[in-house]
Image (cartoon, rainbow, N blue to C red; front, side, top):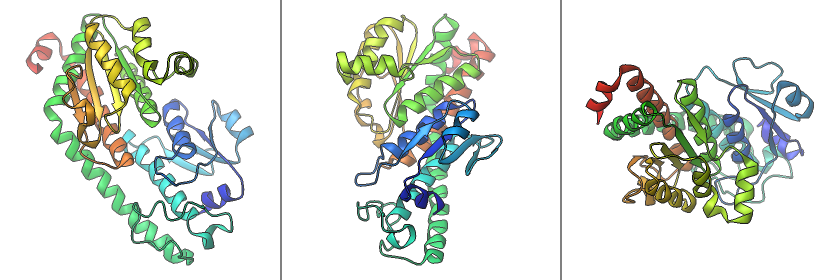
Length: 329
């Protein structure tokens, strides 16, 4: 409620995630470019340092080990899946509050009940704060259970593909290759996080989504569809692995990059929702980790679990040696 009122009063959210800027950028894109049609874009920026966060913040969210002077705090001691779930729920609850004028004042969202499908039992005209708080608490708890169940189901249904994908990464790295990751929007931050975690586990990895100057130059000069395939010309080598993250499995620039990667001799791994989307059945996507859901937020939370497992699998095989990798094929 407090953050919804802050946005209504014209304040903005400043996000700082020491050591994990991908999480901070994911929060910012959630608020500025909402995935739910009709919801209100809200001002959110990313701080590069604690000093910058203190100077620029109207409302300050910290994702880290120490809250400091934060107005809102998400502990980094949680799993990546739980961290992603935390800020997804924060966005959902803020948007629901904005659609209840009696709770946030006259500047409530003009989008109507656009989040009604997320919290279908709530009355958009409800003005009893205590009642709404309790309803949201119960619903948030149910969504945590839903998210955890989907993550478990996704890990189980993708068991064989996780083994194969981890082995592909390990073979590539063992032969001197590296992992390149890509994605759009929130999935771009997921791709950046995957690369960061792989590097932490001593697996060479880079995100093709991370350099905004390169991405915007290519989008402006060549079109958004060439953002990743053009970078493959510069960075990719035969034997590398390309991993693409997408909630829909239908991103044209990822599909184009997969096609090019396959012709260049790269192994490819898709991580997709919507039952796999167009990634499924595309010959240039050699391995596809699929989440069976149509909810963007729940998909990304399950994908976080899959990416964590993929990193653990690749690092474990790398440490176990060549014979173990061959048995995993």
